[in-house]
Length: 279
Length: 305
Image (cartoon, rainbow over the protein chains, first blue to last red):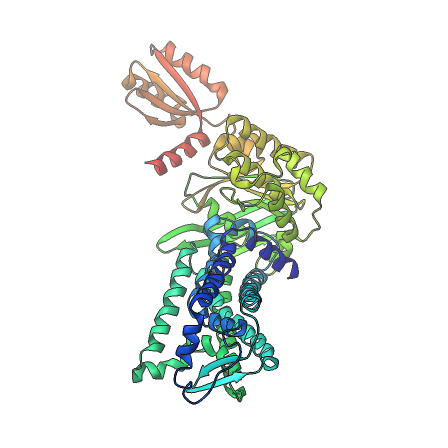
């Protein structure tokens, strides 16, 4: 299995499309940071406008932690797209290229093939999030320096001291990787159904956008659906920046995301094992 | 004789098309087995089922005396194949493609083995080139290399000469003969060209519309003793009377507008010609055709119409 995963990773990182995600993050994050350099103070003032009459804010609030927290908020739309670019191609790409034939005629089970491909896709996803963490925290801290992290949420403002930030970011990024893992598994599932990678990418993104719209519209029927949509849990990394920490809610969200991965992978396996290779 | 492939009542249907219909076939150890049929006859579907790319609807497949369903991995470890057109990872070099496939074969394929295979198919000088820069013929040869990479006992070749120039075709045929005679491989060769099978195969089966039409030794099936001779004459009516009254009557296949089609042994051609001449019939043409060849052509023509 390790050999298979290594082969799949080798194939993934030999394709230029793999680097689109890294390049996009490498451009987008500095762009956001430059924007903050130019207009960041105004954003901080806007966030704290109601509190400025009662409190005096001192210190470097527009720091690397704050910028990284803000950038992680962009996770919802553009990172899923970058994940699907690769995950949607994992199986469908073999069909498009006609390489299923040389792959499946080797003494490797379809279970091993499907599993190694998903693991490789997950590793790519984790690497993408790691890259996001590295560039937003690394560049953010070097450009904006350190300081306390100011977070708005649930109608309250929380200020975390520097020694209480790193572990929160670590867990938040891990959670983000898990939520993007669901996106990868969804794209992978669609990838097993078709013979062209465009289909899984478009379908996965369409589902994410529709689910986000349902989540955003405040109608009773949509509110009732919300707990069943995986997109409702993508932004739950914010729970790691709560005080006190809502452990129960975090575990529930992690459990739901893991369940999504298991169910989607099981369906993919079921389809892939029975699939007639006609390409 | 040890059976390497044994297929019984194999069937596969795609929507309303029966691609393979109750097919039986046996391939013995050391055979070069020709699997012949026109395009769309069900050859590739059968091969895909032999390699577990497609699941059969009915029937059983045993390879090396073991059920394919239950011993897939072990069977594939001992089998090499080309299925239809040769597709590879175009963004990787020929060497890297073979290295990956060698690792997947799980038989410890070494660098020297990869280079040996590339040399065998004449691609050793291009081993660093990306496959996307290869011509169809080069990919076809790389296909042969990947099929032989792990030194399999059984080699399944699905139309391996398609798209090759005459020289390339000859090289592949020579390679098949070399693998059979020198390396003692069992070869299952699919083709839609009778002549190709005739050159390299010892036994063959002709399939059409998913069903077996003829099976046996190539030499027996293509025996020159089974000639179908078209004879063109100046007087068809008198020829009909003459032949019907003679001992030749049992050999007549059909009378045509210009003569007669008759089943003959090669040594009977001259006596019949003499008989007709002596009875005042002028023979303007005498065209022999092997009955199997004609049968195969008739299938192919029907398909192309």
